[in-house]
Length: 270
Ligand SMILES: NC(=O)C1=CN([C@@H]2O[C@H](COP(=O)(O)OP(=O)(O)OC[C@H]3O[C@@H](n4cnc5c(N)ncnc54)[C@H](OP(=O)(O)O)[C@@H]3O)[C@@H](O)[C@H]2O)C=CC1
Ligand SMILES: O=C(O)[C@@H]1CCC=N1
Image 1 (cartoon, protein in one colour):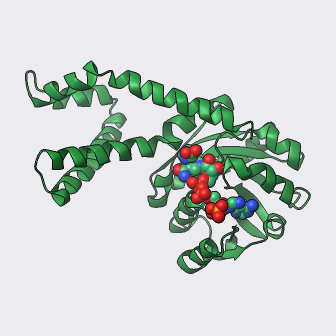
Image 2: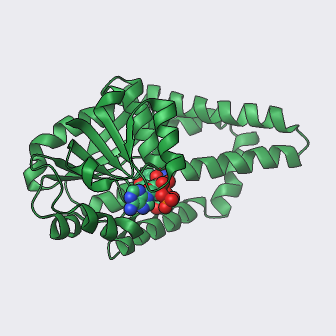
Image 3: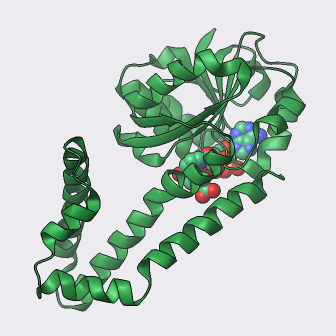
């Protein structure tokens, strides 16, 4: 029996597998990963030493925790394929955006099911994950929270609808920050700085800002207060921030997150 099986060995499954192995939550021989792509399976076998298989049913019958890690659009087919072949005592964990627990239960029958919305920084132990468990999985939720806390930070939410918000916030969120980094690097180049210097200073600034925000949060200091500390009256930051405000930066962020949440809800119909 494997402690964990991952159906779909894509980007997010790899981030979780790498994270849990690094933190020694599981040993490589306690994990099995399936995928339709031999190339992906070779990568998991070579880079992480875990067992791999093309056979979703075989893997599903041998796992204590079964992580469903395929795209939402493939989930119906994947669930139909493994239904009736899952170990009776298994915990089902879906990381798919939008896919609701009742959709999973309809196809698989009654199991403890947990939805987790993780993110790719789990790759380096800095993930953020939201967790929602059905009634049958309330006990398991605490264990799973510990797993995701070991590869970042996890928050258990009260309602399944909140997972759609978590998706728009921290699931997709790394991409928002990466976009900001891309734009800052490109802008610095446009203004005359060389690419390497622009990249080094951008990444270190993002890292420094996040680290300072996390450290300061322990003392109750908010991001807003930290922003004020950078902003000298009549200075350069104030001049820049006025442009963000004039062009409705807050409204743009809200609009983007609302659309991401709506897309998560739409995917539930797949
Ligand atoms: N990427 C992210 O940042 C996050 C993703 N998620 C969720 O995680 C899930 C996976 O996303 P991501 O890792 O980015 O996607 P990927 O496309 O990278 O991973 C999915 C993998 O599953 C494979 N696959 C497709 N069909 C099957 C099948 N029938 N059996 C086994 N494997 C199959 C795919 O192969 P092939 O490519 O050949 O089709 C692919 O390798 C999604 O549901 C997404 O909503 C959640 C949080 C964050
Ligand atoms: O873009 C997506 O649909 C997935 C879910 C959250 C992050 N990536």
